[in-house]
Length: 373
Image (cartoon, rainbow, N blue to C red; front, side, top):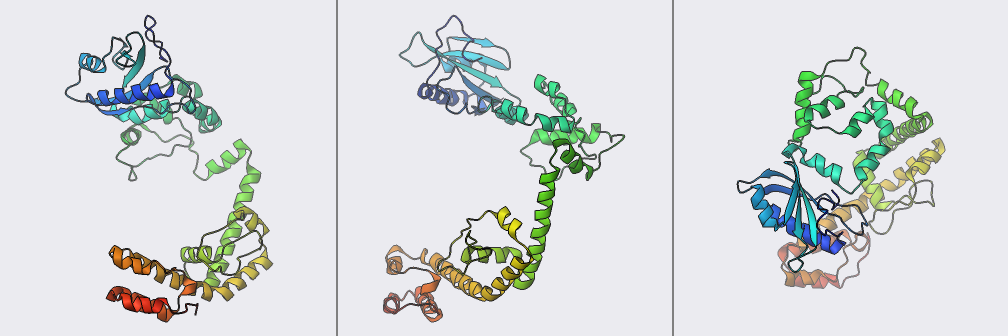
């Protein structure tokens, strides 16, 4: 009610610090009477607050309206069985200034919905305005939505008017923590009827493209997707491995940058880097550049795999070091574990020394000149 439920009392708007104090104290008290108590986050940058809104559900055995009122220290209350406003002293020293705390008792299955609708001030209304064209496309009644729903039945009936709704609907591993969604699926199984002229699944994208006027953007996305598939197939054929593995190795050792049409020479240190727009790179790719890319990968992949192998060995070594007691781990602090500093023999020697706990052997090899093989 925005702090206006008690016109005969002095209920000033609360600055943020005072609001948080009243909110936290109220939540702590109300949790003695309800198992679930949440406060919807307010609008960002709000300079003051008219009241504290709490959503609650699942009362405990100790709950009774008069007990809650007494625990809050309220001097007055007003409302109904669902929403009750309490006037509580702002602090113990104040006898003539009060804060309004609104407690909304929800059904358990409605709590998430009420929290969403009340969060961040007018955010839900902003989103409702933004998606209005989408609701119209889906065939959902705008006025009915704005009027709100009093029961799950009303909400389910409104949702079922969507012209894209497919029948039958089945539970495909729905999250058990979403009881309203589960209830809708159960309701739909008994109440939904197949439309006389159903819209086929492959017709929906075409209809959306026409309604929203995005044919050009759609054609661009399709063309890029086809080109990307062609590039992936050609590159994988030359690489001879799995796509995810190749992407990981190339991203770590051969960053894609603005200076080149393809991948640069292998870098000296393992890192992830990419400062070129992927769509721009894809749009500029043609047959000649694709061929040059494939040749580059073929010429450099052995070096990349070598670096990846040593990098993997280093990670195992570093992980093993973390298991050592602190005094033993200090022996290794002078080492930099980067691939270019290890020879295969020295790496093996250090690993053996590690597992043999031979610090003297490690000190001996720490003085050797380290270089890449």
